[in-house]
Length: 317
Image 1: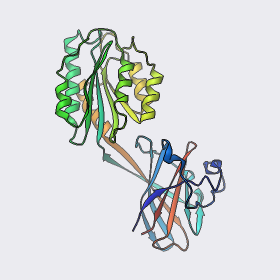
Image 2 (image 1 turned 180 degrees about the vertical axis):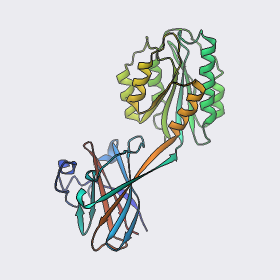
Image 3 (image 1 turned 30 degrees about the horizontal axis):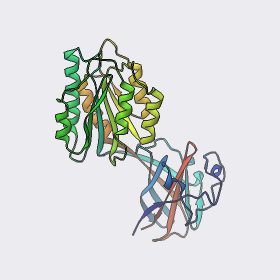
Image 4 (image 1 turned 120 degrees about the vertical axis):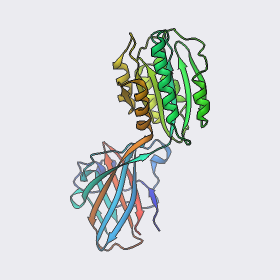
């Protein structure tokens, strides 16, 4: 029987003792302490996926992810502390190897289309935008969820978040009441982000726009901050109008952990869906020698990363 849970050891030692630069490992964790991250956003999440015991040698497969589920790569032995009832091991006593794999995730996506004055009059560019949006929605799976917004000076929710992808697709053909006006791009991305609150799937805003922004109340900083707070990645497909602003698109993508695409819009939509629905998993294999362990022994791993930490524990099979 194996199970996984997390706890903090703040009651036993100061947070500074967990930092990578420390020479001495923290005191072994005790059960019964409360975890402050249970009541706030967990910045990193550590999971012991499996464990194997052979004599005094223990092997652990450990995953470490950010708030949005993205794997944290390039961790070193100094980022890990291993605890057992019989020993506390620091980085010099742990060997580390990594492996990488892909995992398909369910997605909740707010699709945002730009009908402002820099795009709407160009029938070809508008058609390219709508074809790309249709391609993205067409790739979505049965467990995915979607919403659709169009904007210029106004932002209109033409389909609220739903698991009925046929409804999302149908909303593409619904008329937008106030096209061909100034652009509230930042406000539209912020609105799309808000519609994802409470979604259990991986959260994404997919934006089809030239990056032109001239009428929003929200700043780029506010858009990025809101997306980060809700764990939303923004994927931006660039439409090359006369007002094309690549810098805006790049900054929003970089700030939210999303991506910006330069290829033809339909091709970009397919790549955006792959990026939104696929996670690259990095698994760390920790190997250590720990005396007097046997089946049913509890072992724990703490990961310290950029001043953040989380702990997972596991009952050895």
